[in-house]
Length: 234
Figure (cartoon, rainbow, N blue to C red):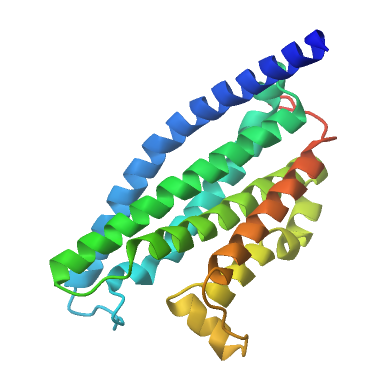
């Protein structure tokens, strides 16, 4: 029992160290991303040819951009990190736990950053912004779903190759896009309404993308559990 407990403790410690290392790298990329996104929104707001926006403001028109960035960042971790982390003592499932940690922390931090941006816009334009907590929860939930989709896409491409990775995109990315279309505010929600999907309110608007994220991360763990390790250059 002592040996098993010690082994689990070491594995958990390795997961925490690997997660912290990747999060530090992501923090730099995300910091630059938010600065650039804010600059883009300012330019969009000041151009004479700017698109018409609703009461939610210009910030809300770019709400899909951070989600796809989270998708790309998490996707890149699989081919770039799996072999290296396994070589340094992590199992494939432990690496999947690292992906979960990075996806969750990224989503929560991104939700806060998104709410800050919305609050700043509301203060500058002297408009009434949305309540902060629901805004954080909505943004974080969808960031988690897209980040999880990125891990699964990366895992399928890594294990099964380009053909299967491409053919399964409706299953790996589709759930995150569908959840956003169904429950998100902004133009995505308008697409869902145009498709005739029933509207959801209250906790369901957050629980649906969170549930999708959990299922996609579980699928990632299953796909990676028996993936052959590709050495760099192989």
